[in-house]
Image 1 (tube, helix red, strand yellow):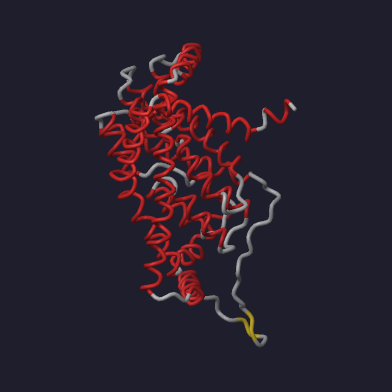
Image 2: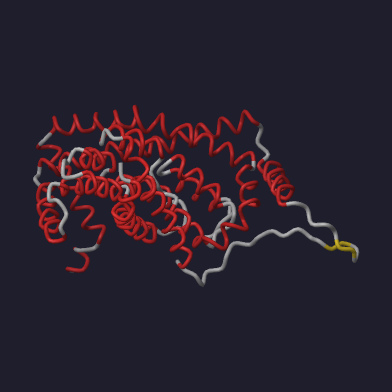
Amino acid sequence: MLRAFVHPLSITALGALIIVLLMTVFPTETLHSSLRGLSIWWQVLFPALFPFFVISEILLGFGIVHFFGKLLDPFMRPLFRLPGIGGFVVTMGYISGYPVGARLTAQLWEQRLINRTEGERLVAFTTTSDPIFLIGAVSVGFFQNAALAPVLAAAHYGGGLIIGFLMRFHDRHAPLSAVKKSIDIAGGLKKRRPSRIAEALKAMHEARLLDGRGLGRLLQDSVQSALRLMIVVGGLVVFFSVVMEMLTHAGIVEALAEALRYWFGLIGLPKPLADAGIFGLFEVTLGARAAGTAGTGLMHQAALAAWVLSWGGLSVHAQIASLLSRTDLRYRPFFLARLLHSFIAMALVYLLWGWLSP
């Protein structure tokens, strides 16, 4: 009976009930936090993510992903134990930011271009902040110091690549996805092997023929798919905005911050950074903003900002979980990778500060 009560679903239901009760007690704050989350989605996330969602869908339809897959296969397999097609996801994920990497990974899994283990490895280190947010919003906007961007970028993206290398040992006995090989011998005579670029162009052409959609239909499907995903992202942003506001008014955020202040004091970190850590636990924008205004010394603030960017916040985790729910990819490896990435990025800030500090 007790075991059933502490089941994760029961805890989730209890938490949802508490949030609903708090919303009835603080209706005005609920409305304002909803509008704030909606504003963040419409003014920041929609224009930043929607074009990338549409473009990535079009590139898949045109076979560009297969072109990069054939081209990058000799590099991706020995380094990350991933097919070359994962190189496209790495590039788009690092340029576009979360949750584009998870979106593309789910699409590759749906097309049977990667298996479950490869998908879990791929999504674990392609869920990163985009450079525009890291440089423009965090370094310039929150810290008001553009010279901070190199150390944040090196810690955040360098930590991501370290996670990618470590994830090659994840489920290492799982088989790799099959690689299509061209026939070199015909009629008893050995043919000259075509160049890798020629093979990549052939793979792109075959993928385009297999897709078969015209440009108009492909563009329409891409926009519709991107809009559906943006609605999910917007709903999660608004939801977590309300949750954070309710937890703040209930005193839960302050209680968590007080516990974190005690822990920070034990390990020698400035206690005022605890508030930024709690905000970053839930939402990356709030956490990065709080780190930039903490006033505890630039190095410690940058280290915590790197932690927040690499952890991603539970709001991003919910977006990733919603994308993975349509596949057989497990959330647990992603969670552990995000946790490890956050501490690696934080440590890299301290290690690189002497060379890249502003």
